[in-house]
Length: 366
Image 1 (tube, rainbow, N blue to C red):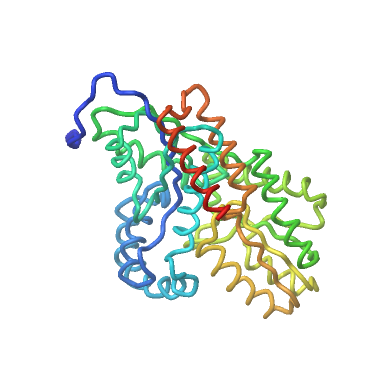
Image 2 (tube, helix red, strand yellow; image 1 turned 45 degrees about the vertical axis):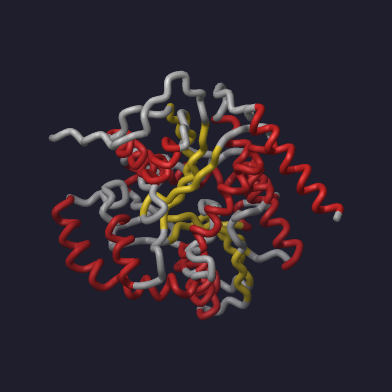
């Protein structure tokens, strides 16, 4: 196999001071809610061997002969139903989280640059790593936006970083966060968001915790995702003070005919309605940003399925998004993994920050 050529890089500066950056990585989204953009996005996403573990030749025929011919138009309509004036919700929230995380870390005297990237589509992981190198970054903490580890998501982010590293001559130090499914601050942020919702809207008969699904065989092959989802759910229920009769764990977004992790979300909602459950609340703990899977699949399709089957009230509890408790949790998680790297602001950064704070204070007085 031929080696990959190295990219042209900024010249090495002797005595260069270490600079640290954080890269917050999410799954990805089309650039627009159009069939063309969705087809381009799906082609990249579904070509990843981490996502679809079917023999390559067979899957290539299915993907290009069937899926990419018929699915993009249908998916584009779904994306259009949740698109915002600022763009894709997933991109909007991920960008906001990165900006807030940099602010939170800055308040704690960490002189780090936080960037965001998408595993598929734009803005790519490789392009952001290139930009970091151009800025003189020598150490990078990679933070996947997935609390529960899965080879289909977390490992795929790492693959993208490794691929970039193969063509990079002067590599920065790299650290990766695998998971934070049982992190106390993450669980606390989830619980607080649900409790605030219940305070304003009352409590349901049943709480459904819906996680993104993966093929069932991944559990047999050693992927810890299912176990980590179950632990998140258990810890969250304990924090909310509810027992096993008051909540259910389900899995959504099944693709194809193979068996995926069960129970499936929509059939569970239908069964609940038919069994006489009047009100159900759904939360998606595995998604830290609202996106197509939460806003369209759950809040639209899931809602319709539950009400059509006889349910009386359906409530979707939004993702953590830019919730201050979540950003604090994300900051705490990042800070722990930055340990050992001197990330304190340089004197010139402190002076600039003080000047900026003084200007803001003067503006507030006027």
